[in-house]
Each structure stands twice: as structure tokens, then as C-alpha cells.
Image (tube, one colour):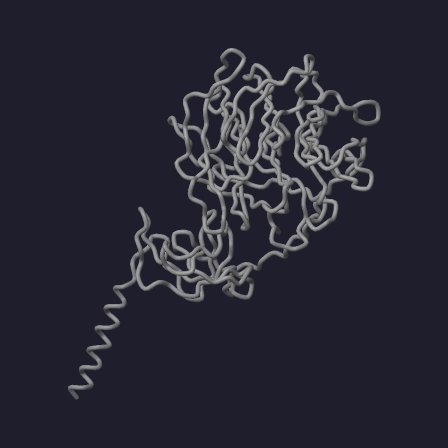
Amino acid sequence: MKKSMAIVLFLLTFCAVHAQDITVIPSGVLDTGDSAHVTGDYVRVRSGPTLEHRILDKVNSGTSVSILERSAAAEKIGDMDNYWYRIKIKETGLEGWMYGNFLKRDTPIVTQDMQPEKSLPIPPAQTEQPRPRLVLKEIGSIPQGESFASSGDLNQNGATEILLLQKDEQGRYFTASAYEPSGEGFSEAYRIRFRNASIQRLSVFSHPNLTQPIIAASDEHYTYLYSYDTGKKLLRLLLKLRSPAAACGVLDGTNPYIVHLRKNRVVDNDGTVTYYLQAERIEYSRGRIRLVDRVEYEKPLPVKNLLLFDLDSDGKDEIITEIGATQYGGGICVLKQSDGGLTRTINTGIPTFNSSSFVQMWGMQQNGKPALVIYSTDPHADTDVNVEFGFISASLQGNTLSVDKFRPLNKRLDEVNNGRQVVLYQNGTGELPFLILDLDKDTGRYMVKKVFIDSLP
């Protein structure tokens, strides 16, 4: 009898102690077998339930997981207090540990069979309307081999030039040739020779608040800002930045700013390099520019692309970045200048395909409203092997960057992607003022094609 009472007492004590082990988490505690999704961007999956364990993967918002196990106790990290969970990523099957603050239980989908008897019947699903496709019309060719393409109006004659970097015999870029429409094709308008033979990318910054257009020529480590006099054929260095990318815009509504990157000395376990975003105001002095009033975002980001554009129509440009790890996923985040610093207003949105060199983005007006246009994969099917490439049009909806339209162009696996480039062509009209440059390797020429929606004019 005493032995039986002792066993009962032990079981009651055991249950009471373990009932108190569960820490109250405002967002809720997940259980084994739950289905959940990741709520943050660039979230680490680790080999064990601590920050010291090895990083196995990095995933973005919306990734679906299954809960396999919960840690014995909650852990406080900064101002967060939550459990670690052993998860299985549904798409890849990878298992690892993730901190609970970045997980949210999926809301069960209620089907008609699960409805109470008195509930109204669920209406039949609407037939999905076919999406408008894009049509390309060839409008000329450019006699140049594989190059990096950009566009801009450096000679300020109102016609956008296509800029193509040329390579020397060692395969290094050293010259940019500018092509303009001529007759039924394109002809070279001018040629810029750079002293730096390691340039990999070109951008042209034009803005009413700038005294003249600025060329940003970037390599793996530096960005060189130039002015170019097309009449005198004079290239002048304005500033050298220790940054692999830069963007220009008006962050405060009045003054032009340069946004550039400061490399984080700590490299992630998978080799991903991260950067601190810095914004500085441009001042002109004796034909050169200097940067003043620096502000910096406090956390490093794995920046892949950089753009300044006024998304919310308040007269001030936002900093729009594509971020992503070396091998895993990516997405768009948005920052804004406020109170003398930089604030991240959108954590992540619109996944982008990162292992391709032709993921690009532009800011423009569409139907009288600001829009972010991204050339990338279908954001609703980015994990499908047969996913399509095309143009994503997105806009701000409150504090969310939402996809308005996706216009498919071709499959990601199509051979044409190996030599395809896209440039903004302001001479064009319509919703998508772009030119597609497809490389014909047999003739060593770029075939230039204009983008139309649904059908040719």
C-alpha cells in the first residue's frame, strides 16, 4: 500500500513539475506534428538548439516546415524569449533547429467536409483566368559579343542609349559603347574608355537634383563615380567608393544622396558576405563631389542589388535592396531615412531567384502610380523546376510590398536565358518600357527586341 501511494505521489509530482516547464509565449507554443511557416528573412537553420551550433541553411519568409521536436526549455535571446524547434523543411527535407520567434503555426484550411451541417455551402472555385503574356518584336541588332548591358541618356539629347561594356583580349571590361536608334537599327553614338580594366557593371544616375548624369562603374570591391562630356569625349573621375555597388536618389526630398555598402568583416559559415548600408549627401566642389552627413543601417544585410525610388509617393526615395545568401533564396527589403538614421520598413517580400546574373529591378510609374518592376521568376512558383521568368510589378499596400501582376516571358531553363539581358528604355511607351537583348553566339551580335503585352501593335 505504501509503495503504491509512493508511485502515485511520484507521478503527480512529475506531471506538476513538467506542466510548469512550459513557458508562456505570446505567439503560442508549437507542438510536435504541427505545420508551420517561417516569418522572417534570412533565418538560420542550425545543427542544434543554440546560437553556437553550425548553420545548415538559411531560409526566407513563407518557407513551410514541420515541427519534429521542441527544446526542453525556452531560451532568452536579446529581448526575445522562445523555444528552439527541430524542424523539417517540406521542400528540401532538410532537418535542423530554428528559434521559435521566426515560426508561426499554419492556419488549418477548412474544407466543405469539415463544415458544420448548418453552414452555408462553399461556392465552387473560380476558373483561373489566363495571364497576359509578353510578345517580343525584333527591332534591330548590335554588332557586339557577350557584354554587360545598361542604359541611360548621357548625351542628354532625350534618347536613351544602350550601354555595352566591351572586353579586352584577357576578358576584362575596359570600354563602354553607347548605341542609339538609327534608321531601322542601332548605331554607335559614342565610346567611353575607362582606365580601370576590372569594371563589371555600369549604371547611369540621372536626376533633376543632379547637375549632370553620373556614371557608376563597379567591380568586386569598388565603385567609381564619373562624369562624361560626350562632346569633348572627356571622362572625369568624381569619387571612388570602397563598395561593390551604389545607388543615387533623394532620401530627404531635396538633396541628392549616394547609398553605398560597407563590407562586414565577419563572413557567414556558408561564405555569404554581408554589408552595412550607408547613405551620404552629395556636395559639389571644384568639379568633383564629396559625401557628407553619413547615416548607416545598424545591421548587416546580404545585399545583391540596390535601388533608390519613391515607392510611397511622399517625395522621398526609399532604399530598395534585393538580399539573399550565397546559395539560398532571396527577397526584397525596403529601408527609409528617418530621424537621422535608416529604418527598415519592410523586412522581406517577393522572393527572387538569386543564382542568375540577370535578376534586375527598376522603379517607375505605372498607370500613374509608383511601382517596383523586377525581372525574375514567378514569385508564386519560384521553387518549381519549370518556373517562368518574366516581369513582376509590385507596389506598396500599407506596410506590405505586394505583387500586382506577373507577366511571364519564358521558362527559367530555356537556353535563351544564358545570353539574355534586359535594359530600361525610356524612349518606349506603355506599361513595360524595356528592351530585351538576346545574344546570338553564332554571329556575335545582340538581337534587340521590344516588349509588348499580349500582341504586337
